Length: 606
Image (tube, rainbow, N blue to C red; front, side, top):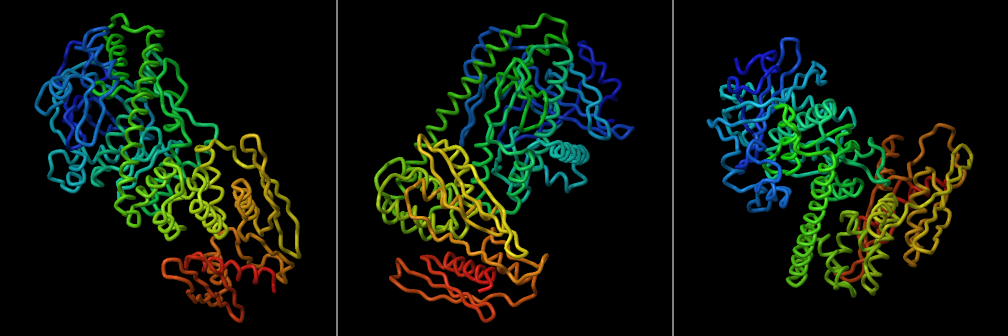
């Protein structure tokens, strides 16, 4: 028998019954272990989950010296090579920490789940426990594959339950995702985090899901029993897309190259407000829950400690230490402190990034910079002002088309005046002409950097023969000026809007619009015949068309002119008896232009 039966544990008193068992699962370097778990299946097919959290409030009372220290620090702060604990290390890493073989007082969140993983019963009590093992995240895969391991059965059950809970949260709309291959996980708020070790992922997910379950249960318990606590609230910004689109964005990391993950992370971050504490329930967008709180880390977070003080007093039938008004004041203090800490961290990271960027420029290491470092270099040069160095311009042009969209967006939206900066802006616009769908992403970035509104589009539909043709123009107000694009035709509504977006960007920047003319004439095609999707990358669209029509794929050939450091490529696309050409400073861009020219030769029937 692993643990007392459910009917026993649901009636715990404060008279310290037989000691509970549990294990801790945490990072391999963690020494402040404040939570332990135990999981069992029920005879009826449900689950019995026990989350045990060290009873910090037994020692730290309201207005005590330790309480004042904790509220001044608000939380344990973690760095690359250590941490700055909220509580004295002798307590955080010693007396309060759930070390194996040591008897510790704990607050127990005891939960009965049905077969459908819905919460059937919640009991919170105070007792003692002894941890049986300190397991590192990285140990979990090995334990799961070793049936002889002492903790194999427990870890297997916990892993099965955690996966079920995560899938259920996703099905209910939570921004939840993880990728074992890349070591990627999402936080409570849905932001992406990449673990240091990929083998940590399963263990991390187990603890995250069980802690979310416990925190959710405590929030429900507090509401039903009218206990004032600090709720954890999370809201979306006005520009946030539908929840389904955010989930698709997170899921896209499963197929995109790892170098682009930072861009996805940054995009998701810009869409959501920061989570905050409060005495009233505002809901949690990332988790898609009505009520949520923090309870499972009283060693590391002051909010959890306050909630422990409140819940502990309630289950002991003692006066609550904090009124609702005091909870409000504490929430305001913590939220402000988090803002100050984040601002200080942001400034530190910016300065560090700028110094690294400057070092890379001085040492002429731009060409081999990673996408993340190249973004830092771009930000540094924009912040510095003046024209960009020739070396940066040359590398930017060489990498254009492969850089994260944030880099091209920064150059278009924030780069100062200068001959070389202007040259790069022109190059970006030419690139957008071959992949106009990226123009919409530039406007997404513009909402968060210079604070633009999204453009307004006017789209009309006509017919040419049996083919629908869309015409779009776009308009936007930036500051006290209004800008409008020319009208652009395309065989799809989206394609027409994307081309109008490119023109609008050029108009705002006061630069020539790249070649975006779309020739759409009557086609000899009958209704329902396969047409070419011109809103896609032209190379792929042409290939897709050939495959659908069972035609030979087009052939591409190249000629090079000009100097070796600034070549001009001419690509010739041969398809049947037709040929088309495209010319650009990069092979891939010239190929796109040639493919696009061939598409409109086919579309126009000329």
